[in-house]
Image 1 (cartoon, rainbow, N blue to C red):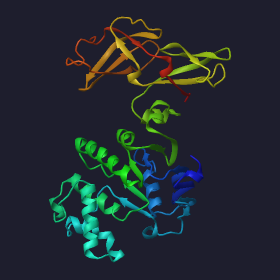
Image 2: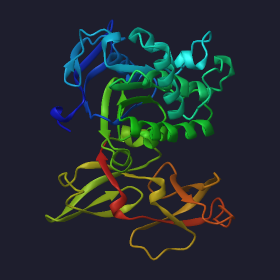
Image 3: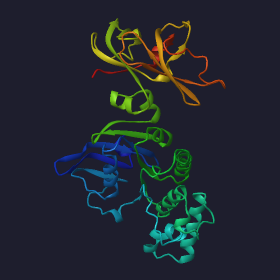
Image 4: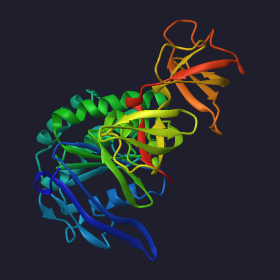
Length: 367
């Protein structure tokens, strides 16, 4: 995406708190109407960046533009943004209708018009008839939707969401994720969402920026981050990954191979192999890219090992297999396609076979 195509442009932004650098030369572009997530562990800088978008923190250097306009000198209440906090900040002394309508007071709209707009919001968040409910009569999920409606009723150009689903239990959180995505599409507002939950980011986002130590490691679509991470740090953070030490072995202009510890020699195409002969690399493979069997399969790329342990997780089973040349076990994930789940799979210590496709490997720089 070019700067001219972006709606939010973050340009070489740095943020210092004393001698501590919380944001380290971050640049990125976010499109209008995009659901964009900032993903990373606690302390990575994602919330600081969100607060700078909101105007609650100033930049130490660099610039943030929203809809082409610089924001450095624009106070929070004059920016075309609104924010939903993790705590929701529902006013306990107001009912649902007055909570949602709170931000409309400065517009001096007639009461009838305000309440009409509130009723439209209640329909949008699927809580019709809740206007007279008191704040203490709401569940956690309902509070989250009320906070969302209070932000959306002002029709901001950008909605900032600071881990708004973090306080919900797993089942309710998954339900709200789908509702939030369904809500964002018709309103067309640019959403910038902060989370530390990889699965949540993959579920909700058009694109994701993975952050660590105040830096942006990679910006990509959910599929791009999962299938083609560019660093070991990203590969480790998004889902589970197996890593194997390797060395580039070139064989002409169109083909080559990676000689690995544990998986043997893996043939790769020129598109995959961009490094000179003899270069140390890492080969990464997702657990679900392996097929596990108790007999040697009729596949070109197989390796034998011994079952270390397994875990039944309902829809899937996870297996851990020790192979020669690799210190830690290989993680394998398989769907439970029958009602017996993981039953019948080799017991601990038994010989098993792993097979995989060379096209499923990811080649990364060595540590």
